[in-house]
Length: 330
Image 1 (cartoon, helix red, strand yellow):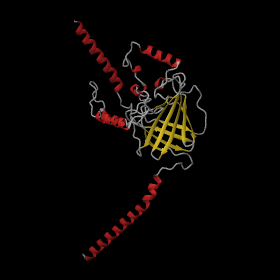
Image 2 (image 1 turned 45 degrees about the vertical axis):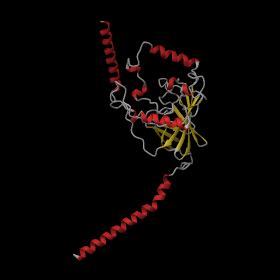
Image 3 (image 1 turned 90 degrees about the horizontal axis):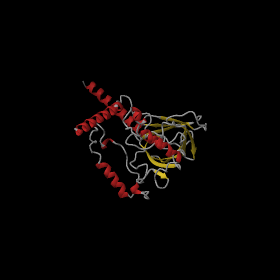
Image 4 (image 1 turned 90 degrees about the vertical axis):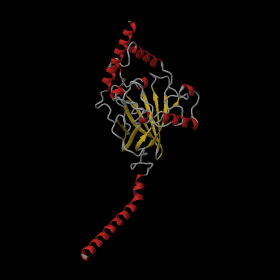
């Protein structure tokens, strides 16, 4: 019995010693692990390091509201009031007739960045006037919609309802109600941008190769990258005509600039140049912050029957309206 007690005591002592050694080893390695995770200005092959998962959510609108004309920056009190108003709306109920939709709590719009618009050029913070060609195309679109409702047919519904192209993924990327995240990662000769919504990836060559031939068109265009000092510059052309970003033509030329300001902040700036749509180019500037978290799968269209339900709901509303009109005529 005494031998068994001594053996148990010796085994316990050995276990304690092993645990202590492991703790010392882990503690000794902790600084090295933390150091490995700190941001460095350059990749191992010498390029500016922009890698990470970034969030660009903000409630600041693309265009400056008319009631804020001439005002570029909000006061701290105005920013705090906007954020307070957003919080008080979080528990508001969905609109009548929208069962099961999100209430405000589930939106991830971010906060105001203190400016009155994301558009930084022109100075008035608004989209430039349409060019003559842009006005002509807008008139054609308006005529095509004349006498039609936006729910008359599946052909009337936009691309985002088919999960082909969404606002946040771009290019250019614009903040929306949720999934305002992208991951940027690099390897020699390429930069990759993975958008959480709708899990699209742009593989951007950095070797100076030319753009595709004009006849080759893609939903996200054809991107080519280069370095301007520590700023990643991405030029994208060859957009599909059906993409029509904010009414743009397939001649749209987009230049994006990604500048890492610190270990956890980045400036995303883009310029849209399309003389067939706007009278002058325009530029927007959006801050982004690193999240330190992974992206999650955004399953958009799989099992999504809302398009058929939206159209059948519109037919039901039309039938109900026709019935009410008939009863009133009697």
